[in-house]
Image (cartoon, rainbow, N blue to C red; front, side, top):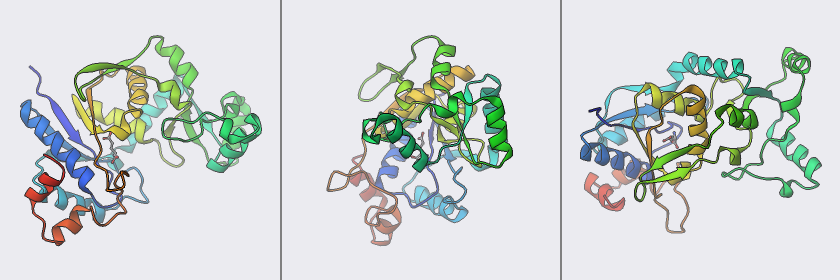
Length: 287
Ligand code: GLU
């Protein structure tokens, strides 16, 4: 029988808060209950915002709340060539294209096509779907722009990817109980698979890493529920066996808002300095 493998995958771009503590400890509890292992991954592809100091602080905070993880810790910034290879595969399959529009270009262009950008569809995170123009550029035009140094990201041609897969996708979700969720990657339009100046994006690296680390159970916040549709599509394109997913409820602040890394009062660091104990943290997050 294979041993279940769980992971906690924070981005070291700020301090951990109670929401992270809940996610990490829930992973630990579920790994314990199933005789599984827990791995830790630093999702640090944002080289500007993620720093070794913040990572060090995260490791200390995680130790303080009693998290125990298998080593080594995987750092995404150390594996950029692996993501580049995955991206190259998508380029060879002709499923991605260089996308030149900046965020303000997207606003302008969708407003122009739809009369008003508010009439344009948005993805589950509320961002405007990428307009079709760049998808249809000729190879010559693309090469010219790239040659002229115009910045671009790589976007998935959702329509082609869909055709390539040729069958409806779904995933096994265990929150609140086990059930099948139909995947709807089309709701995201042409998602970014590699950012400007980076051979990857959150979606691409998370899929590659979960596979390489042998993750069987992804336990993460509900805010990433819809992203799983994109992950299922990428897994299918790469021939990756999907893990089981568990999207847990989020810890909210008193106003019902998602906690953020910029808030001080729920940061683990602050709570520790105030004299709170590990037991207090367990109690605060309801574990
Ligand atoms: N790095 C992501 C975050 O900190 C989590 C990614 C995941 O669990 O899939 O929100």
